[in-house]
Amino acid sequence: MRKRAGTTPDGDHRQRALRGSSASPRFRLIDVDDKTMRLEYHSTRQGLAPMVVGLLRGLGIRFNTTLDISHTRREDHDEFTLRVQQAA
Image 1 (cartoon, rainbow, N blue to C red):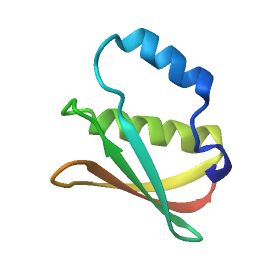
Image 2 (image 1 turned 90 degrees about the vertical axis):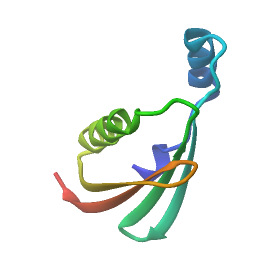
Image 3 (image 1 turned 180 degrees about the vertical axis):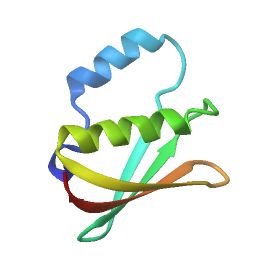
Image 4 (image 1 turned 45 degrees about the vertical axis):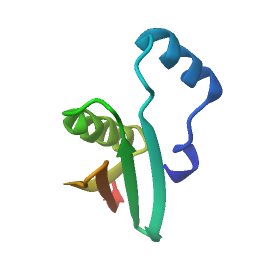
């Protein structure tokens, strides 16, 4: 799953076309250890953290990986801790 965590230029282009003038969200993925990653989600739009959790769960299913996902709201971003539990 880590290998595929980057965005594609083509996908970025499509997102810009769909959203119009609103600012793009930013993601920062940080390796904590072999089974843990931290994802920082920066967006000017509030209240989208549940959508991000759903996207992460969907990625886990797509890559046959069970994830334990915890969410923390920081002052200027949302932070998600992803722990790989097992291959599904």
